[in-house]
Image 1 (cartoon, rainbow, N blue to C red):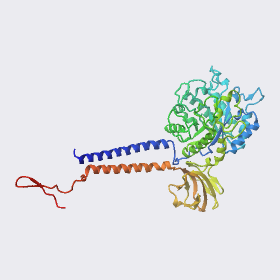
Image 2 (cartoon, rainbow, N blue to C red):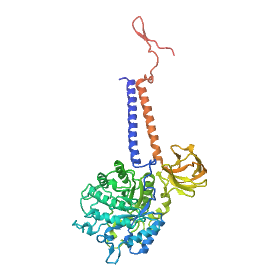
Image 3 (cartoon, helix red, strand yellow):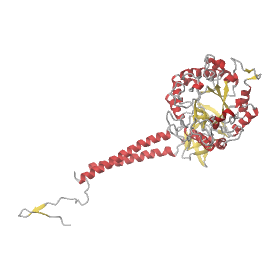
Image 4 (cartoon, rainbow, N blue to C red):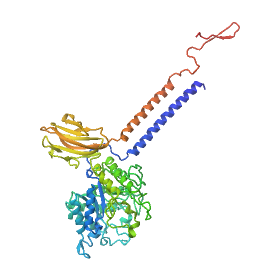
Length: 578
C-alpha cells in the first residue's frame, strides 16, 4: 500500500468518525431536550383549560379539630392575609351523620353541622374558597365489613349511603361551596378498608357521588380523589399511575371535572426533572397528565390537592420520614415557592396547589404524636407563629397570582377592568368591548410574549407594556390576534386603552401568554449547528474520495522525466532545468 493511499484512508476514517460523533451528539441532544422539556408547555393551548385561571395558592386545613372559634378566625385571617385563596377542608362523614339521616350530636346536644357552618361562613367572609373533601365514613355504613376496628376508613356497604351524604352537603352549602372532592387515596389499603385495591369498584362509588352532586347543582365542580404517589402493584396498595389507568378503563372520565394529584418533593428540588414509574418527586404529575392525554381527557385541569416538603430539625429523634429526606425550614420555603413558580410557568393544565398543611390545630409537639414526622409539613406553628415558608409565600403571592403560559377567555380574573368595558356577543362569539373612548383595562402576566385575540373592523387600541407602546388597528391583526413578543421572562403589566373609537370597535375575545425561555431557543441552534457540521464533513469526505490526490511533500507535479540511453546501454536521467 502506497503512502498516498494510506493517507487517504486515514482521512476518510477521520471524516467517518466525526460524522458518527455528530450523529451521536444529535441523538444525545434529542434525549436531553426530551428530559429537560417533557411535560413543559411553551406555546398556549388552542382552548382555555377550565379551572386553571385561578390563584394557585391554597392550603389544607383541619379547622374541624379546632375547639376555639377565635382560633379558627385567626387562622383564616392569616390564610387570607398571605394571599391564599383556597382551603381544602375535610367534612368528616362519620362526625356529621352519626346515624342514617341524623345530623345531631346527642352527647353535646348540638347540630353536627354547627362548626362546619361556621368554618364555611368565616371562609366566605374573607374571600376564601372552600374545597370540601368528603370521606371518613361512619361505622353504621360499614357494618358488613368485619375489620372496621382495624380499618375505619373504607367503602360503605351501600354506595348510595355515600351519595346521600354528598347530596346533603352540596344542598346545604349551595352558593357557598363550588368544589367538592369525592373520597381520598382509594389506592391505599388503609383508605379502602383493608380490601384489595379495586379501581373499578371505586369508579362505581365515584359515579354515585358525582351524580348526587350534579342532581343538586350541575355547576358545582367535582374533583377526583387525590391518589397517593407510590410504585406498588397491589393488592394492598396500588401505584397512583396504575390506579388512574384502571379508573379510565372503568369509565371514570365521565364522573369528575378536575383530576387530582398529590405532589411531594421527597427531599428533591422542584426543578428535579427525572421521571420514572418508581420515582417520587415534584415532576410526577407530568406522568398523570400523560395518562390523561392517552385517554383523551386532556381538556380537563389537574389540581394538586396536597403539596409539600417535610422539614424536621437536625436533632429529630421521632419516626423517620416516609417522604424522603427532610429539608430545613429555609429550603422548605424556597422549594414551595419555586414549585409554584415552575408549575405556573410550565404546566398550563395545573390549577391550585394546596400546601400540606397550613397548621395543626392540636398541639402535637407533646404526647404520643410528638414523634409523628407529619408535623414537619406545617408552614405555621400551632401557636400561629409563621415559619419561613409562610413569610416567603406572603411576599411573593402577587408574583405567583397572575396569568402565566396558557390561553384565557374574556371571563378571566386577570382581565382587570379599570372602567368602560362590557361583555356581549357578536354572533356566536363572546367579546369584551369598550363602551367609549376612555375605556381601559390591565392584564398582569408573566412570560416572554402575549397575544390579544380581537374581533372587529374599526377603531384602534393602544397597548402599553414595559414603557413600549403599540397602536393596533384591524389591519394589524394576524389570525385574529395581535402578538407582542421578545419580552424578558419576568412579570409584566399590559395596559389596554382605546386609541380611536369606531362603530365596529375592536373588541377582546381573549388572550394568550407564551414563554420561550433560553432552553427552548437553544435547541434549534444546536440542531442547526450539528446539521451544518455533518454536511460539511460529508462534502469533505466526498472530496477526499472523488477528487485526485494532491502531491505529497517532495513529490513533483508534471510529467515524470524519461531516461535516455548511451550507446553502451547505460541509462542517463535528464532532469528539467530549473
